[in-house]
Length: 295
Image (cartoon, rainbow, N blue to C red; front, side, top):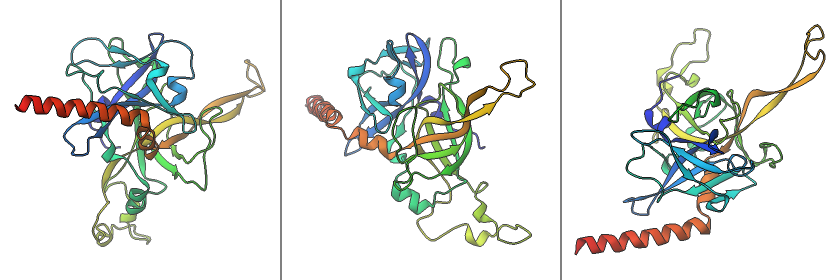
């Protein structure tokens, strides 16, 4: 696994339930049409933001000092229960004193990109999120999990989600997760060192450099935002009969098969009229301020 960029860590925030970190979210930026300014959103799972009772807040690391909570009540969120996604407009809640980066919508994996890049089983992925036992005492401390793509998101093969959420097009990765990583951003990458297509199909497994650089456009190497960790498949496991603890009982444990909501579902969520109205109003104020400052 190559070393990841600091921006991948800083784009993550923790969700607080009654003051304690219990799930992950991350910042997404949608640029204005001319690309001169941005609107910032917090993204997480619906089940992480709203399914649990209690006060919810977003914990952000300032550049100096302890993590800072931003209140995030139910009415502040817009969500898709079908896709187990929630989004909140944070543009006016973040400050220059906060230490954060963001995932740009331009880095999202899209269906056309999947086809052009030939994304397939075996492409490598990683996520960054909350490991609850080591969340950090005063500041968010993000952790990473690493794995490989197992199933592609497809309308023809919907994958079930967390608990009672309906089957939807979702990626599945062979990547261990656990409670706390719900809502984590998942990235997919390819480098010249992890692409088995670079090897000739013969007994020597020699590198066939002639096939490494296809005709333009080239997608041999990239890092893209794939989607949002939303759940794991569970594995029933029987306690051995000779065990002194509940012998023969069936335990249900999280497996290494992690479900991922596709990136393009976030774009669909951010297209909601509620967010569009807020962007239009904010951009109008920005334009008026720009004119006033120029005169």
